[in-house]
Amino acid sequence: MRLLLRLLAGLLVLAATAAAGWWFLLRPSSGGPGPQSRAGPPASAGPVLSTTVVRPGRPPSQDCSGPLAYAVPAALNATSLRQVEWAPFRHPERGWEVYAPQVAREVATVCPPDSAGFASALAGWERRKGRPADGVLSTADFEVMKNAWYARRPFVAASRGGGCPPARDPATLVSGEPGEGYGGEILQLKPEALSALRRMVAAARAEVPEIAADPQALQVFSSYRGPDEAAARCADGGCGTATRARCSAHQTGLAVDLVVGAAPGHRVDSSDDANRLHMSRTATYRWLVANASRFGFENYVFEPWHWEYVGPVAGP
Image 1: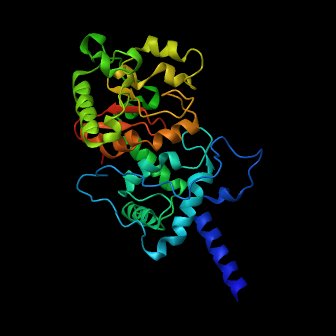
Image 2: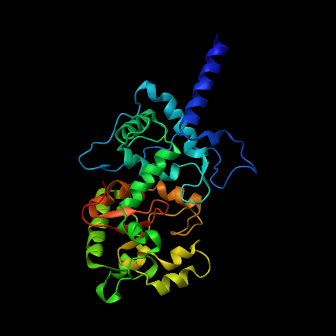
Image 3: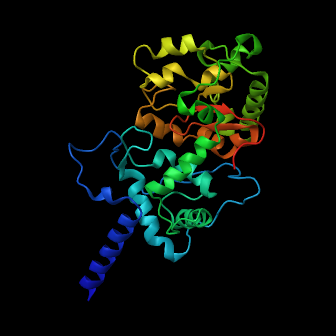
């Protein structure tokens, strides 16, 4: 009887995994662990958002133990969190832990992504979106979230169909103070974007002692870049695609690259998976995820450092 119960439990997990769209978790990996593998991963990723509100007017879920019914969804999320092989941004990677803070923001929870509380909050989000409310993050769920993230960035809508927003006239921009730039960078932004950025940085430093203690946190290492400069930066192939060389959000005078931390041996703008994961765990990035929309900023989720000013009322 005990063996039968174990077999039934295993079949339930397999069925739930397939239904969630993570069936390819079951494939044996070829060539050893991927570049995201880490020896001895922690049992829990810890609190996803440990700073302030997730969404104004919508209290975040606090009971991370969650209903018992979400124990299996939590286990499935815990597995896919670090093991699923996919390419949500056309870049092969393993796991979705780097995106966990943004997913938690979307479903309005502060619970760890491998907890029943997180699965319960995710099920609530799925229900509101008219999706199967099983509490398991699927590839289809993530695609809905990704589209929502893109929709909050006007630059993306303006760039679709081969178009590109006109480059800002540098004469309409204002320059920041030397201390606001990383490594001597002098930032240039539209006046309203610079004003909002300063308010955001001041709030972060006032609210989080860890950020206040790091003089480099939230410094700007890139702001306005004209089309010629963007093309020159991409000439060595570092941008990955010709589109980025042709059309960059930085030419609008509304985009900034902020220091949110860096893994040992990595640059503050390195898109290496280990570095992005490190960034996603910093207090600076998690505060931004929870609070940047208060100041009109939204993130390009693949790059934890890249934020765009979209106006005083951001988010859904």
